[in-house]
Image (tube, rainbow, N blue to C red; front, side, top):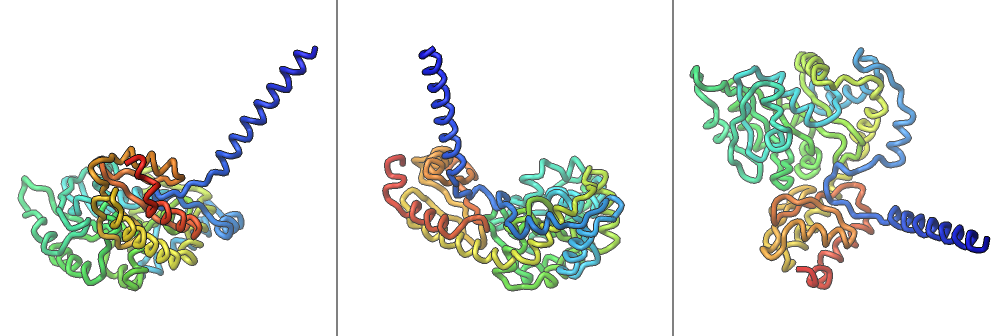
Amino acid sequence: MKSSKYNFFCVLKNIFSLSSIGIKCKLMEFINLISDTVTKPGKKMLESMFAAEVGDDVFGEDPSINALQSYAAGLFDKGDALFCPSGTMTNQIAINVHTRPLDEVICDEYSHIYQYEVGGYSFNSGVGINLIKGSNGKITAAQVQSAIKHDYDWLPNSTLVVLENTCNKGGGSYYTAEEIRPIQQVCKERGLKLHLDGARIFNALVETNESTKTIGDCFDSISICLSKGLGAPVGSLLIGDKAFIKRARKVRKALGGGMRQAGYLAVAGLYALQNNIPLLKVDNDRCKEIGKILEKQSYVKSVRPVQSNIVIFDLSETVSSDEFLAILKEKGILASAFGPNTIRFVTHLDITEEQFQQLKELLTSRFAFESHL
């Protein structure tokens, strides 16, 4: 009997020990620099979601989605907008509406539509892609002019140019309106459409201080993301004139993107557009500060130019990305590899000031990495 009671208390002790370990794990809070997609809704955004009025958006009857679409279209001075689950979908819809099979899309070799959308331009729209080697993800009007193909039977039709602003793989590089307008002029003269993959366009605009209407005037269609630095949980918007969006709704449905009571998500996006854009400047400034710190570290070989909320840096040849990420994780920091010896950090609104100070202290500490590297 005594043995049974003893065994029972041993089991109970082990259960409590395991529980306490679980609690400690839950309490460990990582500084997550993997992407600005990791952001979660804050208290006020969540309150707006719980209070949302909803309807069936496939029938155009969700008032919250309609309000978001109207607001976004107004921001960029366009006729209409379309709420979609992701930026990949908004880009793919834009490509489909602007092109026909046997056409081609012109873009920089770093473009998200080429690098990270599973070749969807071919799968969804039957078009080819014409890559330009730009500078940190940015191309020029002269390069676009040279890339446009002649109208021969054996060549695809150059129909669409896509710019990414800011460019993810280009380290958050951005175009100004002054740089975009010559490209726009070439497209008009040669009969091509111009689409903006503006997943992080607001990170650019808080730097250039240009208006959304100025950017809207440069493009035939625009995609913006709500679930990155703006902090909404899900969703992107495709923006254009009314005829373009009418066709886009049909393509969205064909791609499986028709949603019902998605207004609970839409109000989060509306809250983000109305409240969180100024906060992106903090993210950009923090990232620039991190870049300056990294430039001085012995374990860093080089740092790409930091313009917004992304910093990409190359490690010294003695350490791999996987090794470096493992060390960071031990220290409570999560990041992502961008090559065998290349790391990407992305700042966002969920990083607190306390976490930012901890990050800076770690990166500058000569004891943090020297035992490993």
